[in-house]
Length: 69
Image (cartoon, rainbow, N blue to C red; front, side, top):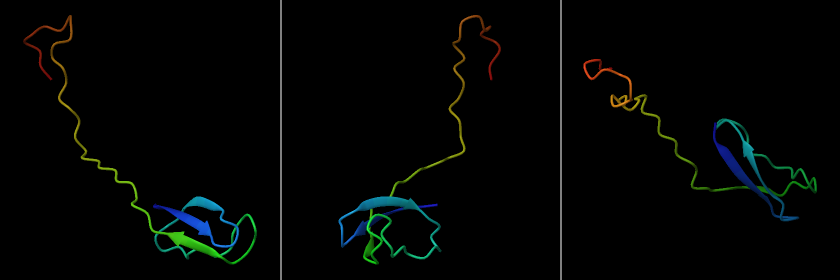
């Protein structure tokens, strides 16, 4: 779920709100209660998950060299 930045054009209050992409844009400022909110365009945050783990370190002390994972 993306996080959107909002700015109130009346009082200058800024905040972030986590919303579904299908959610309606907020209009009412939580601080001054005026209908002057504007959703800002942001760069967003990218998270890459590959599902792979790094190979185990077979040089751990006490593990025989012939046992590999």
